Amino acid sequence: MPDRDSENLTVLIVEDAEDTRYFMRLELERLGYLVSEAEDGAKAVEIALREPPDIILMDLSLPFMDGLTATAMIRNEPKMSKVLIIALTAFPQTDLRAEAKASGFDAYVTKPIDIPWLDELIKGLIV
Image (cartoon, rainbow, N blue to C red; front, side):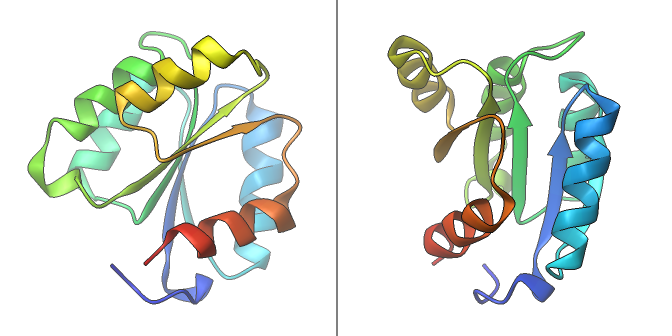
């Protein structure tokens, strides 16, 4: 795992809302992250397994394959065990948090996303 400097970290943003992906990409790149994107869960699995990122920011409600299923598939790959995966959702329900943790997420963040706070969360979770 890289050090805690965001300029060394690759992030895969998995979000079906194009404007949200665009905003997150701009903000994370401004902080020094190297960013790639996927608009659905199936594409996220494909990209993550082909070019493993350091961090995946995964929306839970996605077309073709939801974020819980995509994360479980990613976590089934041994080379993906150390990748930090953060759930992004508009749904703060406790039962969904438990389901996300069981699927392999490292953290759960509700929208709207505060990018400086997310940056600090990422840096605190990377060891």
